[in-house]
Picture (cartoon, rainbow over the protein chains, first blue to last red):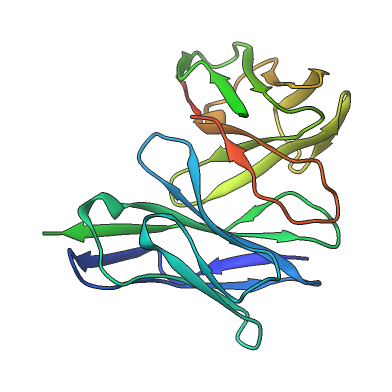
Length: 114
Length: 115
């Protein structure tokens, strides 16, 4: 069965400093992986996705993530945080073999201070 | 382009009352449809998903049910709400491709408070 573990429930950074949100996954087959962002009381927006093409995936708003099969990781990074990046971030796995629905991690809250 | 509509945005209901949340998708046909519930600090929990009209899979046994009366309409219901049903409910759709991982697109959510 597939699962996702987000290693930090809360990350705090200063504006202009790098962001790292960590995610490890478990999947029986070749997974598809996603990062979503959610601002308070809003729906979820897709940041980026990995579907077995390039291992370094670039998304919107300057975010990127690297798929590392040997480490079963899919960490989200951004070189320089902006105040508007403050939100909740979800790492998500979809098992391509079984075609099941998306399985979400518990989320990481990103705080950005000035 | 595809759009997803979910309503109402907020809802306050007494314990024991019925519930009906509606979700519709425009601009696509035969989508996969999903209901998720979000509780603070617990991520998103998949409640139901549907790959076609009348085809509903339940992920978590509970006080809720789902129906898909039309291709692009997905309804979440309850006959008698419990306090524990409070939460943020999200409807989502994805392209119906069983063997290819594909992203889901989310509605704006319904904040349900059971009092």
